[in-house]
Figure 1: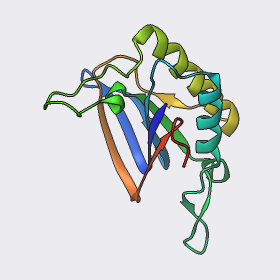
Figure 2: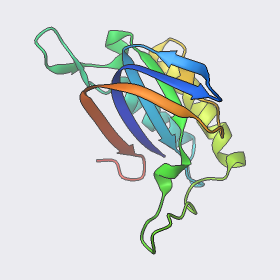
Figure 3: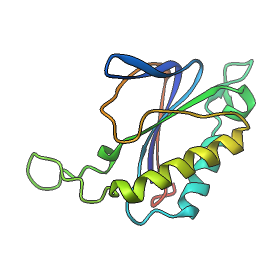
Length: 150
């Protein structure tokens, strides 16, 4: 699994001119899934994100997690995180999981993250054409790949 995690002041998902999800201070997570992803990847990534200390404490030091701040989370599926640009100029998405594999993993990830932070996690609509608006806070943007645990 790959995730782009953005600390945001606010973020929204719009589908066909209708706002379908909105959060205030918290995290926007763009999530890519590949065929080999498993429950182990879900648990590791959800745990890492829930404990990631990227929010400022009273001294202005990034020392607080989303659990500490009780901030919102918005998760949006994004197969393009597995784009390969090795050959030519048209990206290949062969490493991205097919919808029948990725949708259950996506839903399980959202449920797991919600349980860890003990509050609902908002989502985009899986497989839909979405417009994402956000105000990146910081900016703080972190990339995490469960196959490359740095």
